[in-house]
Image (cartoon, rainbow, N blue to C red):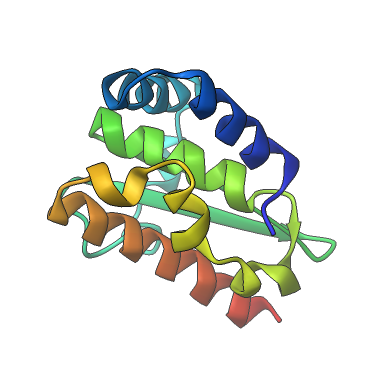
Length: 136
């Protein structure tokens, strides 16, 4: 089950007329994120399998999962923002129970991303899931 922040973006997407508007909205979400500190852009936080540069920095405090991230590509930064809405502030034990593909499908993302972007998105989700599993 998705958290409240993700449900908000699902509602936003319902009001957007076409995919171009949704694409712009995803990019705007990425622009609204605070940048990741340069000190956190290290090999350990870099996500392999993405066409662009992607860094994810997870934090688990009190059994609650959070992460920050950044990419050098605007749309990927937006995808990171969407993933943050999906996963942030969830109990770490619930992370692997989230059907990310199904939830993102509610936004139509599965149908409108290139193969490279879809692979990168899958790599980010895998990193999140592995981090949560290791923390349990």
